[in-house]
Image 1 (tube, rainbow, N blue to C red):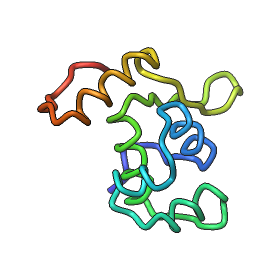
Image 2: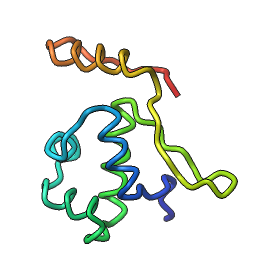
Image 3: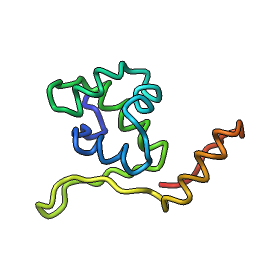
Image 4: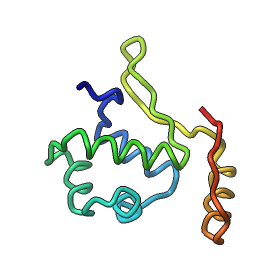
Amino acid sequence: MTDPLPAVTAPQSRAGRALIGWSVAALAEATNMPQSEIEQFEAETLRPDSDCHRAIRTALEANGVLFLPEQGGEGVGVRLKFPRQTVKRIQTWEGEGGATGEDDIV
């Protein structure tokens, strides 16, 4: 069966983390992956399997990162789904023990 999500590139992972202010340790915790594996992936010294790509993509998307496909030869990329201030408020609210809910943001 083909994985429906395109693979995450190392630069997308680094940029996605930067956009939401996450360390490698925070991404490792969110994905339940070893920090060393993420560091090696982002340094492009490790070629991870599709489960690793899916875990990284899912964790970053759930926290406001939007993955951009290749368009017109300009390459893949990432951006925030919502403004940085909104992401910061969501992270603060969730950090205060508030119940998280499903969102309809696409």
